[in-house]
Every structure is written in structure tokens, then in C-alpha cells.
Image (tube, rainbow, N blue to C red; front, side, top):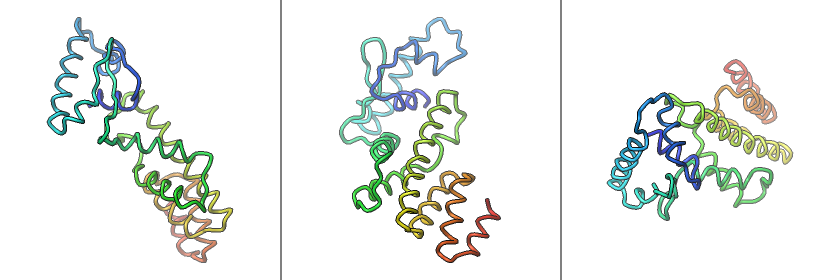
Length: 196
């Protein structure tokens, strides 16, 4: 549901009923959109509580609007991804095992553009682009650090995983081909070149 997506992606911020009705029903000429939103929120909360009472408690009604507030025991992959990527960005240390584990977890959480299988409104496309750029920035930083440390095999592994999320990314394809050449795998590099 677009409503839940919007609230999660704007977590921690109270969204007014007016703003939410404009986002969810941009072309609606209804005379009572606030009433329709209230009904939708109520139904969403009931559905979420059927999954888990804790999940239902994440959808908060606050004075003048609504917000998503992740409760203890609830994890949201996009929140976890953002926390990890933000912590890693600009400070990756390839020798640090804790950071390496955090990086691997970040990689596993990002499986491609946000909600790419859905018809996306403009606000969601912008958010998807922002998350994608953050992912690529952190991956590029890690690849540069690995290249500086001459850890070509790790570069191959990371490039391949990152290309699963963004198969046509020219920078990742170039990095992969370069790392394959440096590990003596010229035929694989040539195959990658033809693929790219």
C-alpha cells in the first residue's frame, strides 16, 4: 500500500492528513478525503495487527496526522539498509571485520531499486534514486579501498553481487573486468565485456 510505503520512507516525521491525501490520491476531487484517509488508516492498522500487534502499533496517529514509528521487535529492511549505509559512507576500513560484516549485510539488504515492480509516483522514484545513489557510493568506496589494498578477488565478488542489483551499471562492469584481468581471468573479463 502506497500509504505505508510513504510513511515508512518518511519515518519519524508526522505527515499531515492533507499531505497524505495529496500523495495517495493526487487527482481525487473528493469532498471528504480526510474521512477516506481515516478509514484507510483504520483498515491498514487492523490488517497489520492481524499479522502482529507490534506491527500494528507502528502506525501512529498523532495530532494533525500520522507517522510510522518502528517498534522494538519490528525490523524494516529499508531502515536497516539506511542505517548501515550511512554509518559506512565515508569511513570504510577493509581491514575492520566489524565493518566488513556491516558492509556484507548492507549488500544483502539492497536487491535493486526500491519497489521497482510497481507503478511509482514521482516522490517514490526520487526516494528510489536517492537510495540507489547511496548504495552505489558505498560500494564504490569499498571497491576503491579494496583496489588500493590489491584485494582483487574480493573486488570480483563485490562487483558481481552489486551487478545483481544494477546489471547495466558501467562503472561496476568496468571494475569487474579490471579485477578479472588482474586475477589472470582474461577470458571471463572478455565475456563480461561482451555482456556489458
